[in-house]
Figure 1 (cartoon, rainbow, N blue to C red):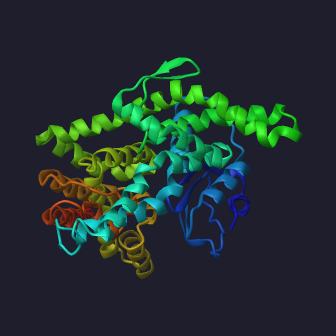
Figure 2 (figure 1 turned 60 degrees about the vertical axis):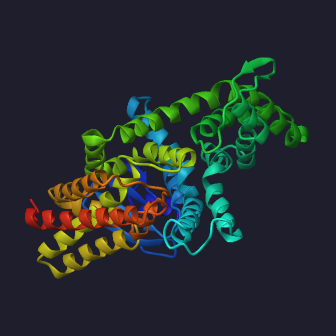
Figure 3 (figure 1 turned 180 degrees about the vertical axis):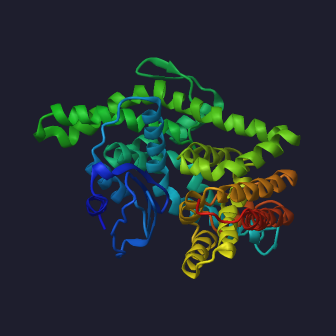
Length: 443
């Protein structure tokens, strides 16, 4: 189903307040509570509506439908802090969501190496070809970020995708990385720069693709059609070289490193500060996701893992936070009096535990009953608190909210993975008990 059909089914712009995209779904906030008639087809997995909240779960990436829906909306927001933040989140989401299949695959290869390597099952020796092969396959998914993000960011900004990849490749050329490692001076068009290693980064190429969208558009408009195919991309890259190397990439690196450094400092502080930070984030994480702010943290996670190989603040609480949604659904299901509502609530729980989709639970239970969010927060807090107390470490990051997230903790000791599983179980059980005690009220 395309965005135009959904737009018309929702009765147009006059009845649509806002549209948000998540990994596998689109959430539409309506102005009226009228029931929307949208039929499930080959693209749509499920549809949930709770008063003014309409949640459409897709089988594949919903971005094409989301873009079409936004085109129909043709919203012209006034420039404000809110519109700027929303645009930044949309750009991060549009650049990172298409990468999820690659990231999951790379993380799974790293997980296989961790499980079968000498630190755990000791099936694969370190010097074996298979161990080496799986290791660089897993590392490649994170190391070559500038190239693959160059492609997705270019599509987000309307740039020729291969030019985005090309620019990402330029930023991480082996010769340039070698200059950064050896502090060799370098100049671009006679302007001196400090070479930096941009492998594993995200923001430098995203900022560069943003500016390149205007540069390429300019040359495509003014270069004659007969020579455009050669000189438009050539002139675009010629202009982008000084802009990227001198201004945009360093600024992006500083921005990315600022949040990464803050997270690393919190993780390295240890003690009550780190533990409470993890626990509080675990309690609030699903609200951060609903607000779209999670992409700032997720982009930092990828950079930290690419550079340090371990992350100790965000990923350790993600599992408990995700499973607290499933626990909230179980607690609510046990208190539901209607058989139909109970069945729907159980399906929300399964959607999280198995499918990794939390939106049905968040909107079908949390938004509907309000107080059940408290049960979810308690579960997320306690499960994440446990993760902080045992110093849980993440060596991978599978951007999924189901049982597969336990493999984030494979790579260190066996006990680290056991603690990761326990934190998810604790978040689920505590959320279920707290939600059941709180009860259900339609008021």
